[in-house]
Image 1 (spheres, one colour):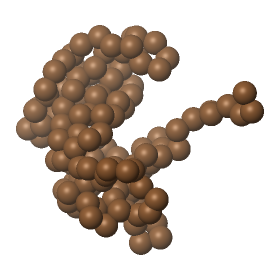
Image 2 (cartoon, helix red, strand yellow):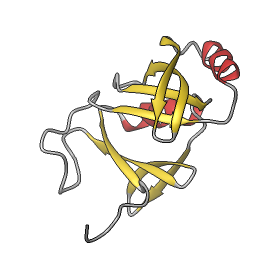
Image 3 (tube, helix red, strand yellow):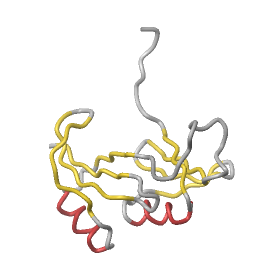
Image 4 (cartoon, helix red, strand yellow):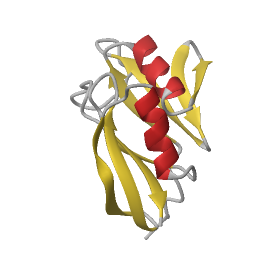
Length: 127
């Protein structure tokens, strides 16, 4: 192999309403809203999520950019019970969980929920 991929830097999500998306990810998931080059994004850890407004995607982009087509898994060191308690306070509906799954580095315990565009969001602890 000519090279090796070391990590994920960012992903891009096409969304129906950037402000609603930022409100959800900053309030419910504790991410930081940032603006760069006139664009909006969410920072967390060493990664970010670039936000593309539906119909105004930055080129190049996915062949069929569609709000609600994402399936994202986020790792937290906060105990899952505390995550569930916090999300319940915010009235964020947990769709499934806690359940055991397999993450990139081993077994994880996860809860699933949806963001404002109905992307599937998995919040997990490594076991």
